[in-house]
Image 1 (cartoon, rainbow, N blue to C red):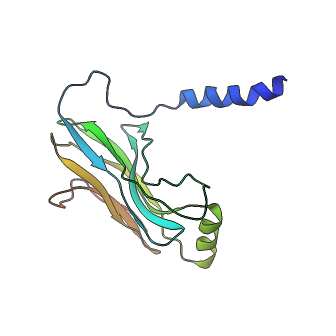
Image 2 (cartoon, rainbow, N blue to C red):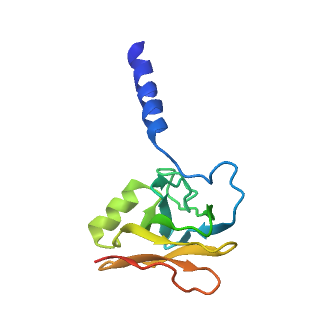
Length: 163
């Protein structure tokens, strides 16, 4: 009986140690929005550029609505987060292919069609009431990702590049 209770207990214990991002409770200051971008490149895969951490805390938003391993089709959704504006913020951003199933990822990798995955940290100060988005370019030889102002398309961070 105890072996059946041990595994769930360990899972709860480990998951409670992971700190995820949320707007500070009771925060009433100015805010900005940061959106992820994604586009389907086929029935079973997509290309996504997204925030994975905010000031070192995991961001649980994702542009993929298909649960990992949830079948042979990618379904995308809008993914965004609200952040405090007017003060510096550090984001871990990433980009590359995302897949509905492991088999599709393995096939892409073996056939040489996989694009380079890129991830890194960028910092900037969001302006109040502005909307930003994570954008990038994924390629077989090189990939890059950055944050840009959604309306002007101007970059507000440096590029993170993987060659």
